[in-house]
Structures are given as structure tokens and as C-alpha cells.
Image (cartoon, rainbow, N blue to C red; front, side):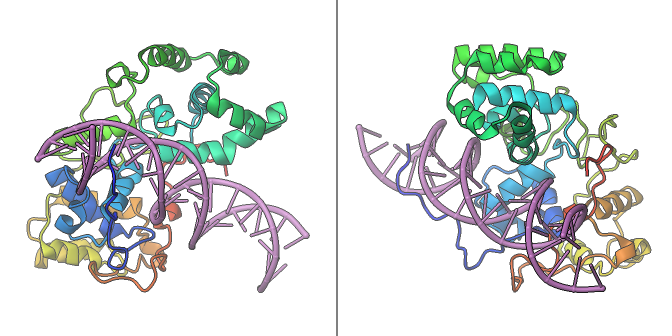
Length: 317
DNA sequence: AAGACTCACAACCGCATGCGA
DNA sequence: ATCGCATGCGGTTGTGAGTCT
């Protein structure tokens, strides 16, 4: 147990608020190239004006290649409900039963959808919620028996039982990878490797040596392409200069500044532009140069990733 | 059309935990 | 055993988008 927590970062000199596409790309590329042994040192090394914690969160919750976007399936929701009935607000634990889902996402889904739904189903969600958090009553699980009895749920219950029996021993984790265990995988290797066969869901981004695993659930691009391992200043300048973004602009940059920026990289960049919401139709994003603090952390970019939701095959909204 | 209200979710905050020195 | 550091985790907040009036 540590004592005397050092300040996470110098808040005066650190950018906060939503991440810009170029920051994302910078982080992705850096982690792909160097891994993330040291989150605290990473922002400086990657040339990001962010605190390490923020980088870690951004990576784990959004940029990680195996993170699964889009609406939760009925199965997933059921699993959350059952897991929450047993584990309470142990979001990271619950996340370990839902590969590709992050604790943050699950927490949000619970707070915004499932809690209310349960509340309307059995009258008083809040009471239940409180009691669930502390009790691990099997009756709660039993009460959920009206939900689909799918393999995942059976596996989950078995996992929970063994989990309880082993009292959270990491070696007894279920097959599903938790966000932390996934990130450990990444940490242990020097470079990002998402080729773990246990990870069924396709990655948000494809990293070198990996390819998209198109799933029925999630709408992903069909073409596979690699993230360019380009890290020189010109590359970032090029990225930042995409205002407004125009597809053919890449070509010109390609010719004049980045001769090694090949077709695959262009494809990747195009996909990234879409993924990050750099819609050419609406004039693209206002890319601010890195290392220049914004006037306001919550700048004009807003939650740019909310503007494009490519993985919403069965949108609830 | 416009303001008020609600929702959804990314990001932040600070404590807990693990680990090496 | 203690300390210091890095990371993990869960609660909370802030903001944009959507909906209602």
C-alpha cells in the first residue's frame, strides 16, 4: 500500500477535455511502435500535452484495437445484469466477462439503461442497486433467470463461481479478457499485438500484422490496412493540416511531403478520418497544432467521435 | 424557431492497490 | 517494514446531441 501520492501531472501544462483526431493518431502510433510500459512518461515521449492517466484512459476506453464499439447486444446486457447482481459495481470484473467492452462503457450502460430498465421491471432499481452492491446473493442471479439462458451466461455463472472460489485470483480469470488483462498483454509485449485468438471481436483499428475480423455485430470496413509507422514531424504536420480534410489532399501530401506514404496507409488514413469523424462534407475538423494549449479544454472539437458512429448497426436512438 | 430539458457518454478525479527499492 | 511510484478502479462531472414544449 503506497503512501504519499505524487501529483498525477502538472494540470497547468496539461491539455484536458476531448481528444482531437491528431492526438488520437499520435497516441495510437506511439503505442503501436513503443508499447506503453510507462504511462506517465508516454505523453512526453509521444509529444502529447496530456497527462499519462488521460492517455491510458483514452487508449483503454477508446483507441485500444480490440475495443468493441456500438450498441450492446441483448446477450451482453443480460450478462451485465447478471454479473452486476453477483458482483455489484465491480465494473472491471464485469468487463472481464464481456470481451471488447470496457468497464467505463459498461458502467455508462448500466447507469443510463439497465438500471432504469430493471427499475421499471421490478419497481425499485435503486434499492436493488444498493443491495446488489454489497450482497452476492445467489437469489439475485436466480431472479434473473427470466433472461435468456445463453452459453455466455452459463459460462459467466460458472466463471463467477470459480471466481468466488478463488477469490479473484488472476489466474482464474474467465476466458474473456478484461480491459486490464488485455492491456497487460499489450504491456508485456513491446508492441501492440491483438492477434490473440481469444479476442473474437474485430479491432477498432488494425495494427501491423493484424487484420480486421469482420463480425456480424459490428460494422467495420472490409479492407485491411496497417497503421503507418510514420512518426516524423512532417507526418503529424500533414495530419494537422487536414483542414478541411479532402481525400485527394492526402495524395498531394503524399507526393510532396510523405513519399513513403503508400496506398495502404492512405486507405488507413481515410478510414481513420471517417472513424474519427473528419467528415469531408462538413468541412472537417479544426485541427489544432499539438503542443499548443487550447484556450479551453472543451474546445470546438467537442466529442468528435460522437459525430460519427460507424458501429451502430442496430441503433437504439 | 428557439429555449428548456433530458439523455448518453467521454473524460476527469482521487482513492486503492501492486510492486520494486 | 516502509516508502514512493505507477497503474487500476469506481464515482462523478461536463458537454454535445436529441427531444420536448
